[in-house]
Image 1 (cartoon, rainbow over the protein chains, first blue to last red):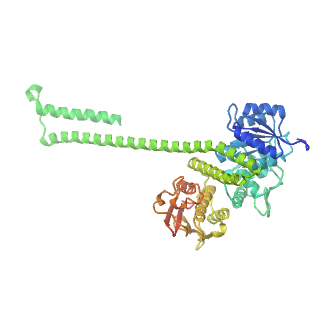
Image 2 (spheres, helix red, strand yellow; image 1 turned 90 degrees about the vertical axis):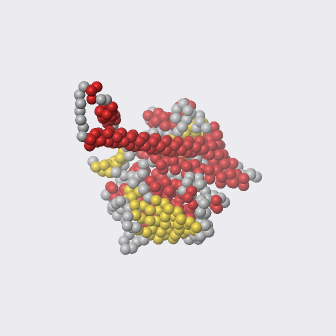
Image 3 (cartoon, helix red, strand yellow; image 1 turned 60 degrees about the horizontal axis):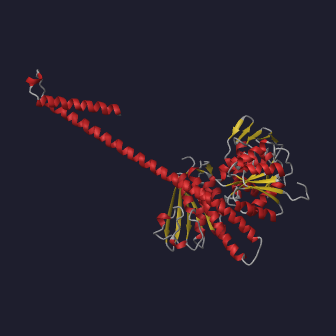
Length: 239
Length: 295
């Protein structure tokens, strides 16, 4: 993607009404749009046109969205992928992320939500390496997170975290030394569907701190940035 | 059990045959003579009859257990069918709804004479989208594993107030004396959703202050949501926690008919109870009872 060119988005959905509607919306938002009706066609378009981002429906004939994503990642292709899911929130989300999707949206959604997410993902520059938020293991000092099994370890001791606390910690660790607001955490870890408040985030942060033995006053891992949000401290290695 | 039947049948047959032979056949035909004391002679048929009665009793008991098991199977099957129906309905509604939402965005970006009509359709499509979300949650709720943890009452209820539509109309009162309420054990996010739905309901169907009160009973926490709104007609009261049920006096207020069903489902999964008392024109009290963490 060069600065002069409009970013190219590949839209993959077997439902014509959704694809054409979204194509018009993305076009208006100054994206170059390519379309595909199923997974096989999607892989062909990716090969030919190397889009900057892929919007991928999960349930499709021929080859579903998860399989497309798996094949891309196996081929070391790290083009950002947004999955359109339609089953349930939590289970589906975790498995899309396991397959290497960068983000997900639950149907029904409106085009503004999708455009906001596309823009957020396109700000990421490195497309040659596996990005931190897709890495399987995140390690910082004596703390290690295994995303696929959703397990956390402190040295050799397993730390049992709730699903959401794990999500918060993984999100913060994927963006070390960056302030992440409560709203961003709510958006990424809880999704748009569940109206929860920012105290829910604080409760999960408190859980992480308690279980990691990381005091808020003198943190080793998570620092509170007053009025802004939270920041993960220290180097994070990915693999 | 089968062996019991076989041996009982053989024994009963033996006892009756012996009696028949003894009473009906003359000793000369048998070639030998045997004598029994009258008490023993009475005891033997009594034993036979007792065995037959015992057998019959066991047989009907087994039969009843079979009927109960069949009924339970059928109920579970119907329940699963209902769940599957909701999932399919939700699933089939999603694609057309997504397409409609996207096309509405497109229309709203090209303002013309019909912009008011488009905005009107948008409101309705959003309601449908909300309904599908509610249906999916309901279907999920019955099967998803709960993430149980110790939940601080005041913090939970405080957050509920933060996220409702009109927090200023809520008067939160958590009993703090002589001691703070012990934590409850539950899935924090589901409980948040249940209390939020109860509180939103009270806010929707009343105008004044809504009391949100938590008090401590010996073995459970009691949370009440009290409004002085229009109340629920007596005829509707037994049904308000059913899915998609809406009372006769609220049809002009938009709502999905899923809020109370969800709250009730969540509380039941926590082993608690939801009781709703109401007087038409006076108000409604929703009472939730939930066990403490140690229980």
